[in-house]
Length: 110
Image (cartoon, rainbow, N blue to C red; front, side):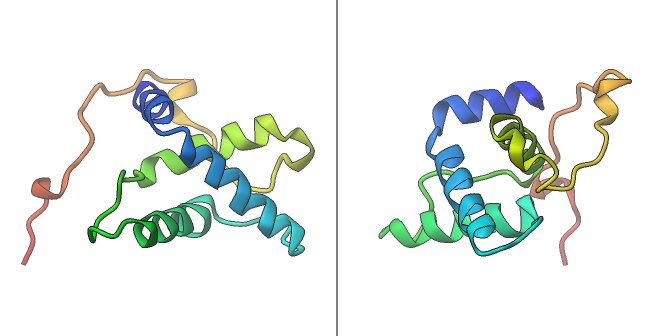
């Protein structure tokens, strides 16, 4: 997944720009911590979807990438380490499964 995130970031550098902008806005408003996935990524989706006049987004932001963006942002801004609460990555101790990410057609929908 790390390779997927890196490829996505290289193809969409605007995402980190927005991630940083929106995170600093939260800090400036007095927040001590916040959700990368349900807060910052959701706003990135909202802002980019609003900018697209064709009824779709120019890119899709995968929820699975939010933890990587949060860690990268805190590494770039060490004075705000801990702003996003993160869990230990199991892949630090165990190899990744190598399975493809799940997609909507993997689930039974009513």
